[in-house]
Image (cartoon, rainbow, N blue to C red; front, top):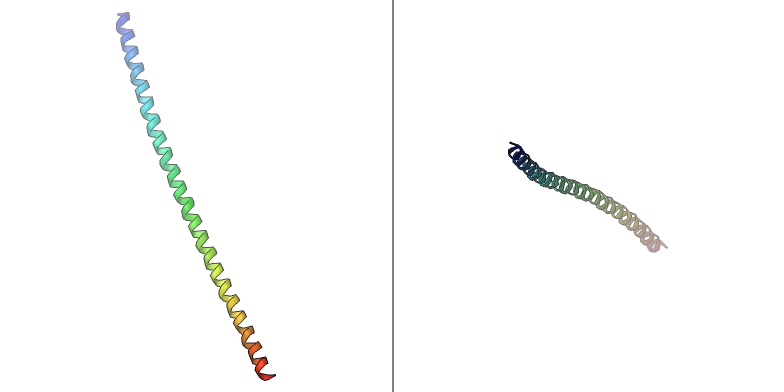
Length: 82
């Protein structure tokens, strides 16, 4: 009787150990998936930020070029009239 109980306890313990390894693998896999998803979200946000920066730089360059063109036209006009 005691040997039967010991065998049952050993079997149940081994099943519990096996299940805990299995569960820890599943949890680790889900954690990796969550980390990958968070990294993807970070990359998407960085990409959006870079696109906004690029748009701002384009706008600033366009404004700068417009101002330089206006100044050049004024200077050319002044040179021609002097």
